[in-house]
Length: 89
Image (tube, rainbow, N blue to C red; front, side, top):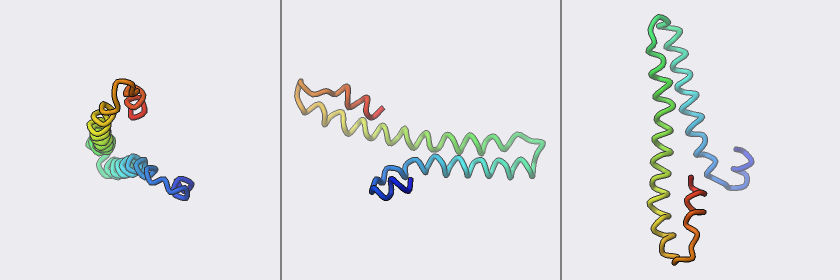
């Protein structure tokens, strides 16, 4: 990530969302397991830490599709819309 920051590529910080949520959910679930080791409530923290970034990236991909599909349709019949969709998938 330091190399990508040095190259001025700011999209590398999107991956930190995954890392931060995973580390936070793992830390919370570990603390909860140590305090309350008989119950399975720690799994809810971990599931929440996995599901929230998934929803965020699903939202970003939906925005990308709703933006670029109409734009690619204006290029005419010779445009390669399939390659654009594969690049965003």
